Length: 567
Image (cartoon, one colour):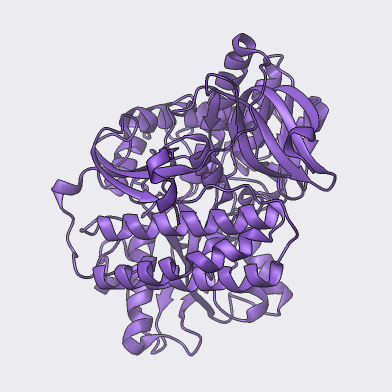
């Protein structure tokens, strides 16, 4: 099919992604009177990481009179290791409580105690401020928002992949090119909002949804948005490692903050005193993940490359609220965690880096907005437990409102269907919102495949990319390992090109996204010659104040003289 002959649709605002950020952005935009279309790769709501979340949202809600937004901000700054954007962090802590109340007004049920919200401790927080969705897990939250979106008249388009942000003659975002069951679909819009974060599936083991393949980041990069902090990939420390039926299911980070929980190595030793004697199991995720990794790599792990979690002395009601999904998963395989220990190990959980956006979700591309995990700026080098869903709520609301405001003035415009190749610039900048730092150039290919699928080749190539990322961008890294990984990655280029030549639109987009994004993660991991938060370099083990900067990537149209050098 010729792209320009795609089926046409229109909306004031088109949202990509049906997790908490996407649904809440769509609902907020609709409340302003905007017409809204929401596009998701899979089933609406259920194909998002939010559906799998443990259901904790950290916020200062007024329930604890001694807690303040300033205390929450201090916790974020300490954990972010100097890389959080101050205006984004301040906006977040100020509006987290109101966002919880907004969700309540939409019908979301939170666990309550003594007539108000119940508060739970979460690792890295100085106060108990995590509110939990009723029943444990975020399924009730998501189900409620799906219902509200449908009732509001939002057009929900599932099983459809966004492949290109369409522009107008001035280069502003003016629509979206998608591919779904009926072929190509072009949606004209006054504003485009990306809420399709999550890249865990580009690694071998992850707690992310099957469709969290990082393609949203690639979509933003192709459109001209800036990506930053890609080296900061969060490994959740306690995903189930055994039995195979539940491998990758997270216990929920809030479990580690519950009194009585213990992590034990294969010898039965409680080991966290070696890594964080003050906080022990309630340490932040980067510390816990490296501790478990070290116990296993030094021969004190279980036969399945894990450690044990013992919750026999915890409060069962509290655990049910913070780890309901975990309890339901292991119950199905006949394990009672209060009577026997459970094997856990780190896996990829969250991307701290992503699209550079302001407090209202505006990116470097006029008319293009972003919210949720796909954005960078709040978490810096490490995300605090329970801040992820709250981030999606706060900035989903703000971006939805801002996108609707923009659409009212922009209106529909003629769409361009030319997609030139681009060159990626790597910049080291103090503030990636003004990317004027020291440049480094590299080439990537920006493609729009449209032939017949070659899924078998894609599966093998994706498996190799995942293995390469483990070598160069795992829990512990070295410069030499990154260089080896980059060499292996470069050697895949002709194989990727060949696979893309015969790929269908969705299969090709996913493979190309994985290949490009993995390259940028490796490049950032090799460039940052220090250890900070989730980025740990064995050969550079200390944090270096000279690296109080960000590594950013920006794709620009490829100059004619460079065309012959494109890989």
